[in-house]
Amino acid sequence: MYHGTIFRNNKSYALRQSRIHQTLTTFCPSIHILRPGGFCQVGVWALSRHPNYFAEMLQWWASWVFAFGSSKGLSDVLWWITIVSPLFTMNILLNTGGTGVMNANGKNLKRYYDQCPDDYSEYRRNTSILIPMVGYKYMPLFLKRTLFLDLERYEYKPDMRKSDSKSE
Image 1 (cartoon, rainbow, N blue to C red):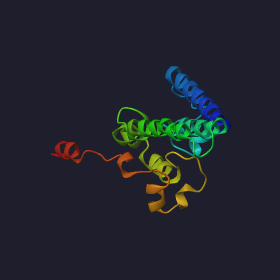
Image 2: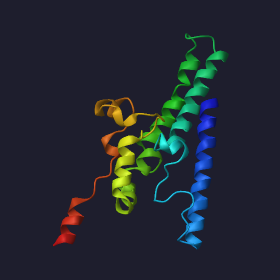
Image 3: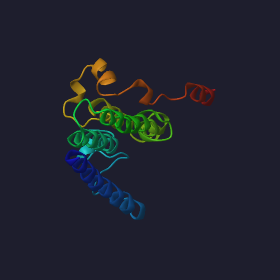
Image 4: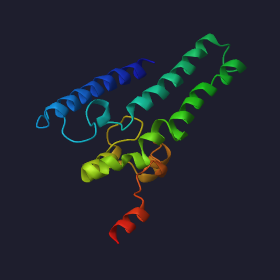
């Protein structure tokens, strides 16, 4: 739980900095003191695109592991049943459309590709979707798609039908 707390505190600091920046640029658009652009790349966001979801999952898995100390060992059926909690949390954050990573990706990335397409494409190539790490850009695609959960369903794919109708 210690690691999850560190990620949450760092995430909160970066988010506060981002909100300060948004407030300042609302009242005075020429001020760009904290970060120019439309997406956060400071703090743990330099290492992960969704450190808040990673910290949430990490805390639930750590709680499950720490609960082992109060169990009767690996043969304790109740301890094994409690694995449902971290698995449920992961399912909600990774697979449920209206929440978590599914909601934060896909068509919701359009604003970044409209505002700063080259910068955001590079950020996505170089930054893990979930697990904070350095050197993500050097990982082979099959590891990104499996071990690091950077699944194709999280990518932004513009609706070609709408762009075709606009060009006519």
